[in-house]
Image 1: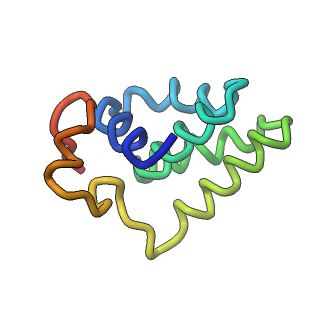
Image 2: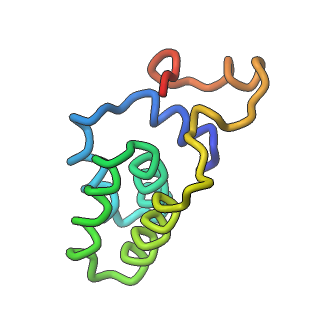
Length: 103
């Protein structure tokens, strides 16, 4: 997983996908957990609420730690949205998401 993955995934999800992303926090694959957490952080209040509600259910250390880290990031006033990640035009064109990424 890298920033390209997060930007591509974020371009493919909306508020209606919050339950699926929340379930992904409990996936056995750590990269899937990280990806879901990174996108939920970018989804504003709805994403933060999904993270917070998942934390109370997280019994596995890795999932719990990932969610706690994501919540800290979501609360960071200096956090920038994924759409603001510094990429040049060539890099943005190489991302295979679901269309133009609009925050």
